[in-house]
Image 1 (cartoon, rainbow, N blue to C red):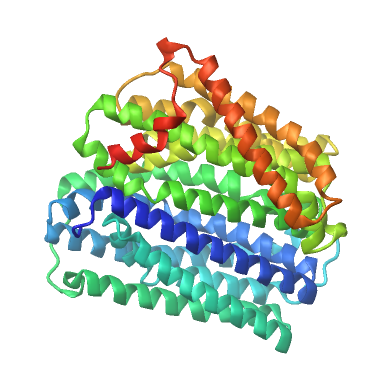
Image 2 (image 1 turned 60 degrees about the vertical axis):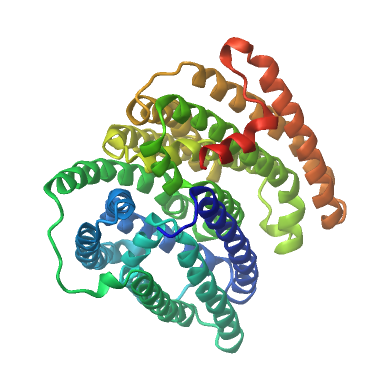
Length: 515
């Protein structure tokens, strides 16, 4: 770690990551627009199906990256270079094995591709296209392990800038070739070239910052660290299963039961949601290394205080984003790709509520990653996966909700499992305390937030009839006013014995704790 303080490092990582994510989001919209107009919604649906299938294959990573990144915090802080080198060598071997497993898993899935597409679809040779997509995924593990040492050293902005530059050039080249040679296979082939180039460049940058990574004399990882990794990788195995089922099967279920066109329409909304969520998570997750460092240097009371402040800050951000989404979705989709791609108001409401409820988890997930509570997450993730899959399949088979059935399955898993189990892990296993007041805070945020989102949807219907820029300005002003009402209501609901969280010292307290 250089002379940057934790505060400066966190702010630099957060700000650069957020700017990069916004740039990538804008480019993704531009690229998606040309993709839809040139190749059509069925190819868009096929691409969404491939994304989910590769998310399932990424299960083989087992959370090794997160576990090793966490293991790097202490040796980097103590300048224990031999152990840093040993961990990085272990990481390299693990990722090479994972790349092989991904390829084998993809070859196993390939024969079943036609059965995952309901109805007729004119998308060319799906096997060849999937082979290209699979190759890109496998090659993404080449040299990418070097990113971990930059992230653990609070130099994640270097990785962020590298990814942003290559992604900008990639999107421009892909758009250019869509005009010159409209081919989905060529579109994927270009992606492979840039994946290799990006990973190679980040490897060079990491070697330059940490020259000892090129040395050949490698010690063995300490037995205590190996024991930790085994335990937490087993914990992450369960977490990966949960993540794969919750976020990696939606498009597969929709494609199998409804068709590729439905996947394409839904993916337009998820592109917006994932883009906004990426900006938010980049802002809040960039301080994960600082939280990990904070745990080493601060006492229990300070950690509890930070957790509550961080939870409230995240709630403000995710509620503000959700209200703007529900107000602007109708006019934005209409302006962007046309009225035919708009989903119903009811389905849009379900999607945005799902975004809000899932976004409330950001603070919990960030603390769990920073504290390395992967082992403690193992059963939670399995229950989450089971509830999500069962609810989604039951609803899509026995109701006429269609896409909404899949989204409601995820909402159900979040409310029934994650809403209480994740903060319990943070407080009980991470901070080593039990705090009942979190339950009241979460319920207040959930109920008030859902109510405000429902109310603002009516405004969105009216905004679809006016200029989009005017609608954007109005939605910002309305969101600010409602957030102030939201904050004041929380303070009123929490009497002194519950230590209400005050807006005036929120940001200042978080910044102070990172000093």
